[in-house]
Length: 537
Image (tube, rainbow, N blue to C red; front, side, top):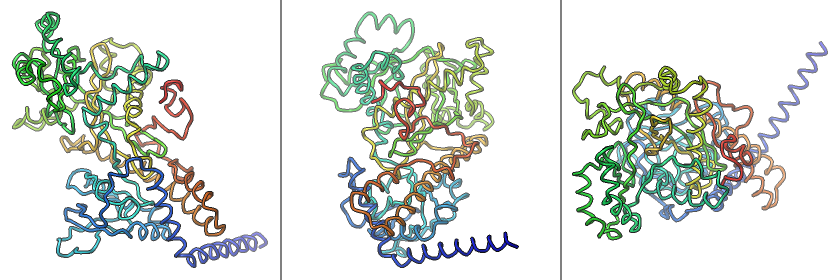
């Protein structure tokens, strides 16, 4: 009986405390709105390094649900305030959306509590169709970044976005190469060990730069080049920079193609006069072969946050093989480039079962098994002790070479796919980096794996959003009770706004992403001890 009385008393005390706190908060509704408005202002003022990219227009057109809609500059304050008073929207539900009709949209709609209605333009005049409950915009287009005002009409405090400005520094081939060479130059000024293994991009000439362009044409006119060409086949491929993917813009420099390039550049006389982003890159002619075919493998990774920098890499990898057998003298592009679009074009009209042959596996374990059978490796721990660390270190270097372009904000993230090639001597090279990579329905297996992939990404986004929401909500309540100084307000907000997982929101053990960068940690620990402290920029 005594125990029951004690429990009843504790319950009454808890109820009184809850009623007092929540009554106080509701009485201070306008103050809550004001605090949230100030927090959004702090983010825009303090965490964005390229603010000139933001629209100065107070109204804009936004393609969210295949219709043009108009948002207003009070949206974020309304949305954030509504979520503050209704925690379950963030802590228990998933409110996400997708703006294109694709596999990702199907996956997103299967787990979301909202679905954006396709309004006609006449019905939505001067009205926003974006609900206040939206927490995880998982859009294909990045209109939130380019056509909105952060913290006002979109990019709200209690949202997590799957895009970030600066992604082109990884995804555009010309920018990737520019950043790579600048990064290598910086590493050369550091201890020698820092630049020893940063060789993940083959020797390349940027033909829009006069000196490199001249050096390239000078080299291909030497007897040494001619001898290598006759014995080994093409020595270079050309690539177009900017946002050119799916195998487009890639040309094998056989004799005909080389002569066309020589004609266009007048054998180097036009160097410095042609601004087109053309890259002449050393062709790797010793690829590891699977059943006589060249293979590539794609590793997905996400920048989960830029405040601080947090990155996850996916354990499963799509291994693809080229459509035709490898022959370094072959004029068939499908013998050299294994991109899905090129494979599909090559086998167009064939039985779909044939298609399955070109997507070998979603597990790098399969590659390890092949190498063990072929006695190219001896250890069954080769994957964990060699390949994964090499892949992860390469991704870390890719990010370190471009991180200064990223806006610093815990509401930002980005999804990438980096294509690697494995050589016969088991070295790896980066072929290209794709932002916002397409997730296709090419085979039933790919549908299953892509579904898992998207859900794993969303789980990470949701976990970080919920963690931050709990910290900020608690901080707002504290501010209401204590009325801090401006200095303390800014200091406490800065710390609470940093992305980190709270214990009550762990990533599930069956999530296939593993963390490879976490700048909440210090020195080499931030990079899983794969990069030495003295080599971190």
